[in-house]
Amino acid sequence: MKTPIYLDYNATTPVHSEVLEAMLPYFSNKFANAASKSHTFGLSADKVVENARKQIATSINAVAQEIVFTSGSTEAINLAIKGVAEKYKSKGNHIITVKTEHKAVLDTCKYLEENNYRVIYLNVDENGLINLDDLKKELNDETILVCVMLANNETGVIQPMKEIAEIVHKNNSILMSDATQAIGKTNVDVQELGIDLMCLSAHKFYGPKGSGALYIRRKNPRVSLSPQIHGGGHENSLRSGTLNIPAIVGLGKAIELSAVITEWQQSKTKKLRDYLESTLLKEVEEIKIIGASTERLPNTSNIQFPIKSNTLIKKMMDVAVSTGSACTSAKPEPSHVLLSMGLSKEEADKCIRFSLGIKTTKEELDYTIEKIKKIITENSVLS
Ligand code: PLP
Image (cartoon, protein in one colour):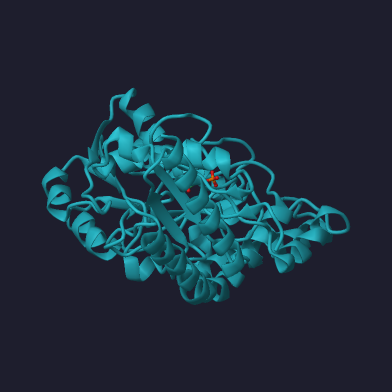
């Protein structure tokens, strides 16, 4: 077994060998610009882009015209939220989201609040779930958009999206969902779930970084957006800028593979995740699994330990884990997700997120478990 061990797959994943292989020709031989429609080089590049668009659409049960390429989920979220806010301004200025959303959603909403939009941040219960009655109460004629993530990046908790969609649509509002962590770990079908806008990001499911997409529903209801990046009119004028073809090819291939990867995660990875949790629960005192009694992603485990997470992490430098989302782990603040779930600051400071992937082995977990046990024992002797 090689160290260091990587247990931070929710932060990012390695590019799958088949994805890399598919991408490579597009850095050199097949270098054309997909917007150069006056020659065969450009036309071939355009074909490749359209193929990737179909691969994404097929995977989430959409149609190709409903997919817009972006640089990842943060950009897709900005386009979705600001795009709806601007487009539907005459209908209303009210947006509903949830306290446990990713910062990409929360900070975009904060920005809109500074620009005369009203945003409601729903509470969650101790399992990280929203209360559907709270949602019903907050909806009104002015509500243009509701943003609820499909699966949480820190806890893996999955929201009841079908029920949420029914409520949102009854009010004639638009439902946007951040599915960044869901693809490749659970089946995502926009028709079944009733999602109108959905972001995804290739680097979370064994594709390249800086490549993602936004799904925009065209029928029942047809959703329109105001573009946020202006220029050459690419992507149906919704997102101008020369397309990053290798990254798009990689995204297409990665999402094609995601069906097989999801199956693997739901069987093999889940078994390993459950093994990690049950062994720690058995062998270490005062351990709590966050969100354990509700539906979660098969690879994610957020665990509260009897000692500070920073102490644990510093002493196990050869095991890569995290205390929150990758985007905020540079800031030493307790997780807003855990605080929203009712943990005290002190409890939240003791939590670590383990996120497993398709390369994770039982041997790696045994090593991690032994290391944790040793650090906690040493710590209790010292204190
Ligand atoms: N939303 C969630 C739930 C995430 O986990 C992340 C990444 O950590 C993002 C959004 C941002 O994605 P990207 O890195 O593609 O901008």
